[in-house]
Length: 60
Image (cartoon, rainbow, N blue to C red):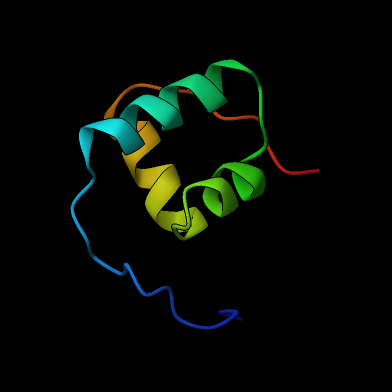
C-alpha cells in the first residue's frame, strides 16, 4: 500500500511548512498534491491539518 518511505518520516513540522500547508489547503488543493508539495506522507499532512483545524479537499 505504501509507495516507499519518505526520508522525513516523523520529522517535526517547521513553521514555514505549516504556513505552506495552510496556504495550499485554503486554495483547495487536494491532499495528494499538498503531500507531494511538502514532501510528506498524506497521513502526516492529514494529521497536521486536523490538528490545526484545517479542511483539505477530499480525493476523488
